[in-house]
Length: 255
Image 1 (cartoon, rainbow, N blue to C red):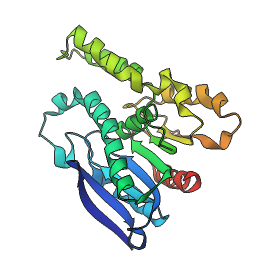
Image 2: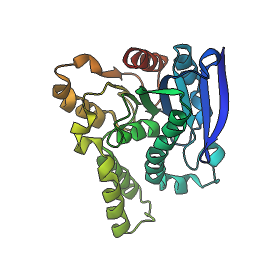
Image 3: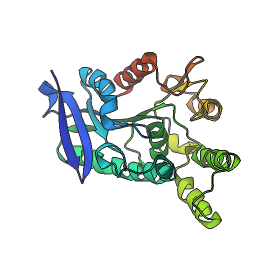
């Protein structure tokens, strides 16, 4: 039987999903981060599949989402996107520490994954935390400063007035650089990494992420089985069932 427990970890709403028989046992652990304007409950099916494999799962709520929603106007929320990502990267460590202190997780078997904004968060977190032993990015981007530039360029082309001064934009670039995996590929340290991305994605462009993958292939030359990029030529910004099952299999194999 799979159980779903609602927790508040340092005020972070989190769903804890695990086999009932393993609830008090030290297990492999995966945190899964939801996408922009989504909510933690929307990924319960992924948590269920992982829990069936004996993996403990935490689904945290991102800032300004779900239970933490402050009813922002959609346009206003867009301009908080990167603050949400940076906050989420910080909060992942708090969630990991909670389960570590409860002696519920095996520190050598911790995974991280996410969809879209959650994939971006996952790839950014790899620059910060050695305790991440395997990762999966579903429609995420590792080149976050480039992504920010493309976002700002698109807004300007559409005539949107930015509520940010040039100085504030430069500060945001400076904030993001330490979390930009594309600028520090050595931080990967040969950790197992799976990408899934639809070629027709218009929200998080496919090409830059695939180029990053090609760039890091030589880093995995001695252990090529630890790196994989699954493309779906027909998919846009929506993860297929095949992508979900590939994620589950990846963590089953590498955790």
